[in-house]
Image (cartoon, rainbow, N blue to C red; front, side, top):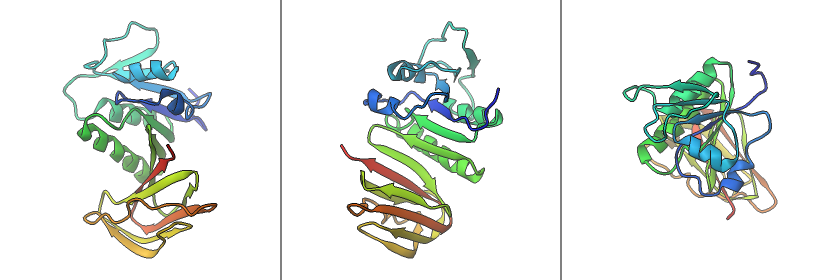
Length: 212
């Protein structure tokens, strides 16, 4: 299967309230992986999976010709983590994760850390939910257009140094954000401006909050 320049969309089973808005993030040609209860979300989003994975504790085992990987209930990886690792094994390098936040907090946090796992391997990942878009920022600049109401920078691991934020209500220059003090919450792009974030050392979680 040709994976070059093809994005992988992984759909989990967390609640999706704005199905029409979320479906707009899926592009023609995306490779769709549904994880267990994510089959319900795939149906709501109007997409047909190319691959199904799961231990099927939240959805009946599907009777389908679609490739299905059935996982044991007792395992180290969650269904979503397994799906991402399997897609990486198949050569995908760009990921969109849907239906992976909300519901159980432990699953939400575990899924957010998938972004760090991808970033450490030089791969791209973004999580989109009903209100926000989440991605990991490092030395490569990240931009936040003024169409976003707010954005936050969170340090979920270690120490981030040389944090610079421009084009925002609360700018930063060569700042430090430690994981034990989160002061980068609820910043705003300046009207008519595009805010930019860079991190010299370490990584930060960037959460862009869309206008309601």
